[in-house]
Image (cartoon, rainbow, N blue to C red; front, top):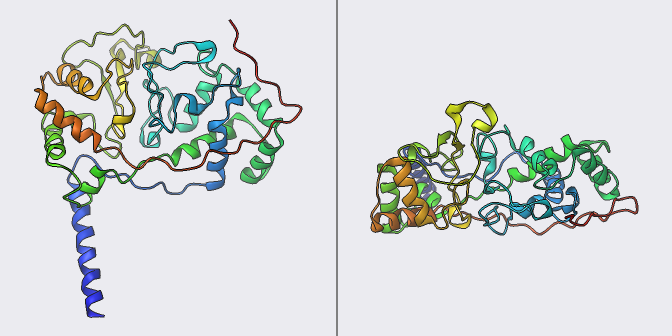
Length: 331
């Protein structure tokens, strides 16, 4: 009994020490999702993977935010309806619930608002909210599931995006090796990774990349010290506010799982992490990292890869005879 009491006290001390350690750092560990409505999230998962929410019947949310690829598509800019090349790099959906706004330009205030955008965007899923509602209403399995989740069988875009957002709340990636280090496991990081983190802090990277998601909490100009040369037409936050001072102001991307979500930046202009680190040092910090420094920071960034969401692909409700057939791609 005495031995058990000592062990419990030791465990408590270790956990307390780990929590204190984490509290002193600008980056915080990710916690597993809380307060999730599982039935609603399951409905949202089906809608997230369902290509019938697109005009062609071939594009789903997962097409650009592929959960087997770090929640992105690994393309410079995404491909949408009629093989249109999108104007901007698809940000990861993983840990997106931790962002203070959604999209690079912050035009959506939350996940629910974001979920409705691609469905009606003519360059993405190219549907309308009304037509998407009609498709889902025509599928008996969906109608029954909406009734189970919302207590009546009303199907509308408000509930559809609400369910998708609930599913996306579950897409967090805790237990990275860096998180384990934050919580007191001194052996979780290599010497190179730890040196990279210290350099990351010392160089000023944490002025933008901090908090639980290591970013996603502010807008900053792309090119604070030197001009960022790109042919990408995106004006960033200016496209939302219309203010000239907001040109090239983008939501700071979160760096969790960053090794999986290449290429980087709003235009996909950096093919590798090394290139991204070099560019950020030069245009944001006015610093030229040596090859050794660059390698250390890259090693640290790779330690931010957490446990990827684990689930089986949903069985989508079968279409009824009344469900409009998918439309082929048009020229």
